[in-house]
Amino acid sequence: MEEPEMQLKGKKVTDKFTESVYVLANEPSVALYRLQEHVRRSLPELAQHKADMQRWEEQSQGAIYTVEYACSAVKNLVDSSIYFRSVEGLLKQAISIRDHMNATAQGHRQLPLFVSRWLVTSSRPLASVTEELSHSAPGVLSSAVRLALGWVLGTQQ
Image (cartoon, rainbow, N blue to C red; front, side):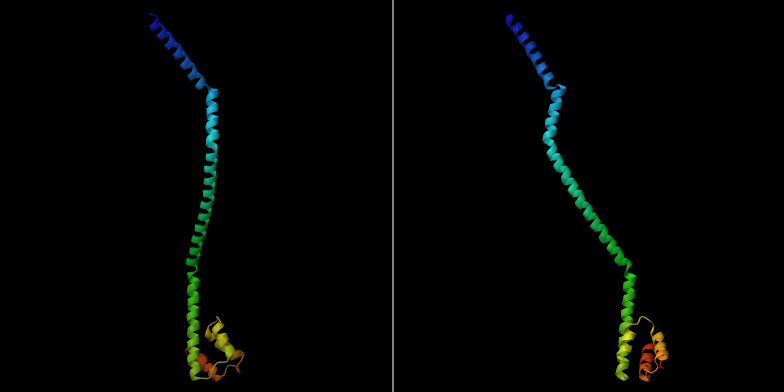
């Protein structure tokens, strides 16, 4: 009989010992120690991930700024199409004046150089230029020049 009784007592002792080891292994101070070990192992990796995320955020902010700046530049280009059309019109007008002046110069005397330069660079209408020249400097505005200007303006003087 001793053997089953010994086995029962041995089982009770081992159960009590296992329970004691389990209690000791799960005691709060041991749990805190294990938590501390876990944090010590995981913290460098987490810190590296945080640094990577911050670097990516900075790069993303830079890219966002670049895209916003490019969008505003494109919008400004679209808004400046009025000015481009104005410049285009002025260029067409200048080419037309040059062509008319070349056509009249072939049939008549040449315009004085300062007058032709002034006509090409002036932003005023040609009619006001003709009036100003005829009133302020009648000697400069010869009949050939008046005829050339009249041809450009579409009227004969």
